[in-house]
Length: 239
Image (cartoon, rainbow, N blue to C red):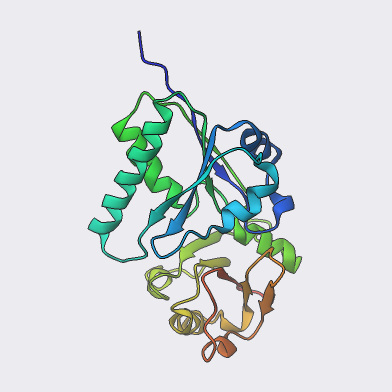
């Protein structure tokens, strides 16, 4: 007989607005035995927990899994494995475990890395990943601007390495999303300018949060770099 285990739920809780969390995620949170979320090794803050808090019963434990903010892949892999083992320990006690992730559970998510280690180390544990509204979907809605129309295509890239990820594509996309466009906003702006897209680009800071800000002049961000929760939408045609 196979040993019984709990179920791991990876819950996308949306970009920031608590009302954008799905009914399914809210239902699971209401019945989970324990809730986990990712946090930096420097603090225990989690925006995902803040979004989900109204749906978490007062007596449900909420715990942080700490991840180092580093480019060292070995350090990252060690943290992913250690945190996966923490989840596995809870799951082997037959607990229902919810892991919160901002936006969608499968788009540039820390959960995705931990999930791979859970599946490798404990393949017998059932996992259910619940999608959420991504930041760029919410940003397009905020702008009242469709992401794609007709036969158009959409390219989604990370801005962690500036504009280099975008530069490697030979064909300019109809529509472009730069996620995590904060630390290297100057190079991202330069890459968009090189592709003739800068004038049709908009940055959105803190999408869905009370301090949300729309920036239509990317050049203005050079002297005041945006924070982590910033993305850029660009189009071939005017936004």
